[in-house]
Amino acid sequence: MLSTMSERSELHQDSIALSYSEARLVRHYIQHLGRWLDYTDVARQFTLEVPKRLLQCPILHYAVQSFAAHHRKDKETAEAAHGSCVSLLVEHIDDESAH
Image (cartoon, rainbow, N blue to C red; front, side, top):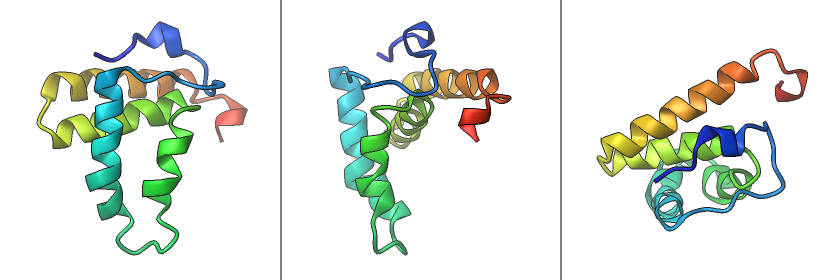
């Protein structure tokens, strides 16, 4: 299950430790979803860069978790990650460093 939002309230962190289920969703994202998103990108940024950056950015972490869980038809995890992502976005909407 996803970590609580209070554990990841900062916009950027040194490194986010992934649980086994989170790592499985990131792997699913890399193997399936990132490839689709990179269809026209020869640099393969969605497959190569996003997985690195989600380890430092909780918003991106939750977005990828939600996307992958939704694709795997895990509605509960997808909705929880989506809620955490939106909450963090709202929390940082006026943060200049987020721009």
